[in-house]
Length: 307
Image 1 (cartoon, helix red, strand yellow):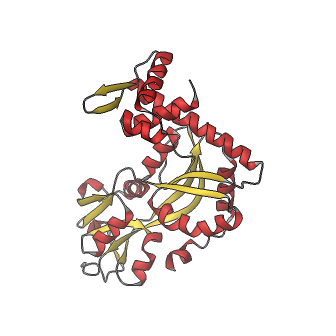
Image 2: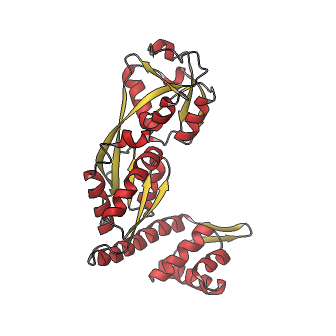
Image 3: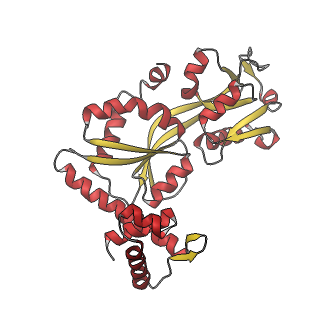
C-alpha cells in the first residue's frame, strides 16, 4: 500500500467515478482500477460497489476513506514540519470556521497573518460547527474555529472570545420601537432559527432552557443555514431572530435592523479554537494559533465589524 494508492482511492471515492478520479490523478482508468483492486486484495475488503449509477463506498470503504485522509493529512504535517525548519517559507493551513468567525474574525486577521507569516497560505472551509468538527475528525481540516462544541475526547478546545446573541427585528416589525419585551411577549412572536448544527442554535437552546422558555411553544417559520440568510429574512419583515451581535453592527447603525432586549434573558457563547487531539500540530497551525490568540484582532473585533 502506497501514499499514491491512497490518493487514487480518495479521488475515486470523492468523484464516485473511476474515469473522473483518473482524470484528477492524471492516470488511465484501467491503471486506477488496478490500484483499487490491489488495495481491496491487500485489505481483504471490498471497498467500492460498482453499479450502473456510479461508484458507491461500502461500509469498509467508508472506514478506509476516513483513515486514508488522516494518513495523507499526517504526510502534509510532515512536509510542513520540514518547511518549518526553514522559517515557514512555504506552508498551507487547512482551516474550518463556522459562520461568525469565518465572516467577522478571519477577514480582520488575514493582514496580521500576512505581515507575520507571509509564507503561510490559508485555505478556509466554511460550515456550521458540526460540519467543521466532522471534517476535523475525517482529517480534511487541521484547525477549526467554532461557536459550538461536542463532548468528545478526540477534540481539544481553546477559548478564543465571547460572543453575545441578540434579538433583532426589521424596520416594519411592531416591536421596532421597543427597548425590551418580557419572556411572555417573546413567546407570541414568529421566530426564524439557524440550523440545529450551528453554534448559534446550540447557545440559544441552552439559554432558553436556563430561562424557562420552551422553544417548542414558538411559531418557527424558518430554519436557515447561514447568519446572512437570517439577517436578510428579518430585514425583509420575516419575524424575529437571535443572531450574533458581531454580525449586525453595521445593520443596526444604518437602521436596517433593530435590537430588542428580552427581560431575564442573556445569551452568551464561547468561540473555540479546536483541533484533533491525536493529530500532530504542524508549524503553520502552531504559528497561526499563537498569533491569533496574541493579536489585537480579538480585542478590536467590534471596531472591525463597524468599518
